[in-house]
View 1 (tube, helix red, strand yellow):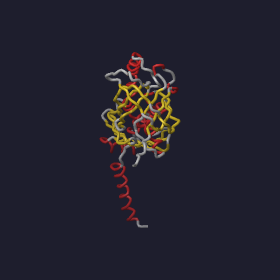
View 2 (spheres, one colour):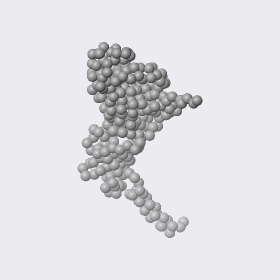
View 3 (tube, one colour):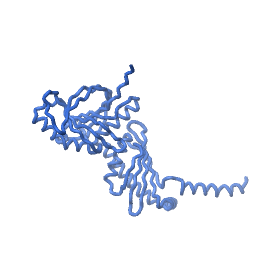
View 4 (cartoon, helix red, strand yellow):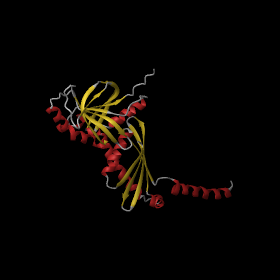
Length: 303
């Protein structure tokens, strides 16, 4: 046995490991856990949690499953790097890397000595998020995905733009406005209210959509400055049933995107939602029903 080589190699290995641990390893603390939902729900819940947490300074999305967040705790800034991956349709794995750039070396020394303040703080924060996520998952159901034919529908509508989270608020602000106009002008309804999303910015969670009331077509429809008329033409679409508060019905949009990707179906990401309950009537929100559609792109016809 060559003891001289061992004497030389051992310090080199220790130095290499130390450099890796203190200076190369990107995180001070890592948490890995699984949740019973798909990545988009984690993504959207993380944004809800960020908006409700005073210590969270900013949240930046690089992709649906790749986000960075910054927290301020006293005089320290902690960087959170979230990576969310689907294991299957109803299970995701989350890897969270946490770093305090100003105190990174000190944190790693403390961890070696059995004192891990950044770990203790991170555990509390992660548990708070997991509780928020588990609570959110219980608030809705998405099921019965299938391919259907959407019929032609004529409707009156108002155009609205804003964040996905304000979709239901925009509907509630206009439901009486449109209803009273239709009633006053004796325009006959022909089904349940619905929305058609005209533009969906998935990175910024913003949408431009029409809030619509299906009506029977007439040659004597009155003109209005804001309430317009339009026809939704028949088309093929993927359909899902959503049960829960309509604030969260966009979760079904992502479920349909996942289904389309898994089954190699080319879709147009302009969802349509049809609502079967009046939120003003209250009741158990899990009994509320919306049918959510994602139009399937038509094949180009070659001549």
